[in-house]
Every structure is written in structure tokens, then in C-alpha cells.
Length: 293
Image 1 (cartoon, one colour):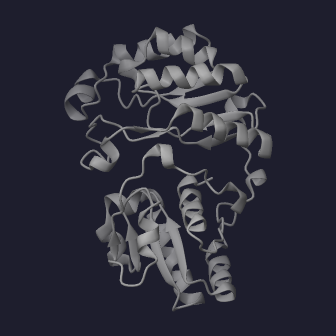
Image 2 (tube, helix red, strand yellow):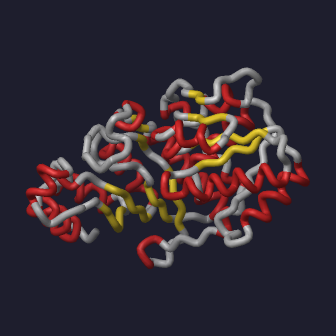
């Protein structure tokens, strides 16, 4: 599920707004007709859409469907694409473009007289709410972690990456380059909530990399170790080491992923500035396997 839209939904709901989520992930290819019918029936004050850059063309089609079903309904867009390329969203005709976490910007965007492009204050991860998963049918999502028959879902433990790989669309934005981490106790609370409410025993961390802040990772693994939770995460290969692999495996980690990008040291170092080499990437694989990951 799209956690970004669910975080925004909870921020709006907590501020007293009436919020509904129309989940389109299982409605292709009829989603445009569904959207037009939905806005025509409900006539909301605002509709919010989220998109990554590869999905942006779909967001524009959703905008067109809204205009067809209810021309006077106002539409905002947020998410990674809006944050990196707000001008393209303005050009496409969105009434508001939210370029931040969404938790603060969305509250500004729905106000009369707000600017078309909104950049809200960053939110300390310690103040993140739980995503409003109750507004979607989470039971319809089927993610089997690593083929182990473990009912799983995604969550965020941190946001941002301080590295500046040249292919990264966020490398020039401080918003994406600053690492912000949630308190591990809050992550465990969310994991326990997923287990008690939805019988989810596996976690997929959507963080850019979980191993940049070593002390934070150690505390998270210490807390996860007592829960017998299987989990998967992305890591930065050039700082992944035996100690991290050992404590992650002991805490239930069954799979790690890192972008290899190329087998050429010249490309890795000079062309994309990945801070890795062929040997570093190979060591990442052998180290993970050494501890059963």
C-alpha cells in the first residue's frame, strides 16, 4: 500500500477533516471510470493524488477523470514526483502541489488562499502518526515475504539518504539528503499493531537504507529480536559489515537488497559516484549469506 497517502489521510483526519481513500491499485484498467463516478457521487472539497515519476502520467489521467466527473472539485498532488518536479505538476493543471512529507503541507494546501506550490515544514519522525491503514482494505494485499508463507506488509523506519549518487533524483534536495529516523520503540509499536489488527508477521522496511545510522539499527534489532518477526530491508553495501549482518539476522532479517548498478569500477566510481566497487558489492553478498540472509 501507498504509505504516503495514508500518512496524509491520518494528518487530515486528526485535524478534523472527513477523509476517504479511494484505493486504485486493483482497479486497472477501469480506474478512470471509477474515479469519475466516485467524485461525481461524493463531490468532495478536495482530492489528493500521490505519484512517483514513473506513475506521473497516471496521476494526470486521474486528474482528467476528476475533471470529467466533477469539474469544480479541487485536486492536489504530492509525493516524490511533486517534490522533485513541482513545475510539471503546475503545468499539468493541479490546483495545489505539495512538496514535503505531506503531513504539514496538506493542512496548508486545503486552506483558501494557499499558494499553488506548498512546501510545509519537515516533521520530526518521532511525531509521525500511524498511517491510516483502516481506510483501505489491507486484507486485499498479499505480500509473502521471501516465499516463506509469512503474511507481510510495508512500513517506514527512516527517511532520507546522505549519499549523492548521480542517478538519484533527490541528490540536490536537502529534503531527501538528510537522514531522519523514527524512535525504534515507535516502529515496534507499529509492528505490534500490524500483528494484532491484521495478523501481519513480516515487515518490509521501505527506508532508503537501514544501516546508515549504526546505533539506531542496533537498537532496532535489539527490540525486534524478541518478537520473532521476519523482515526485509535495503542497505548501503559499502558500510554493510559482519556486525550489522549478524545482528540483523539475529533480529529476524531474512533478506537484504542493495543497488549494484554496475560491474564496472569505472562506472561505479566515476560515472555514478556510488561509493562502491565490484569487490564491495561481492562482499555484501557473501557477508549476507554468511549469516543466513
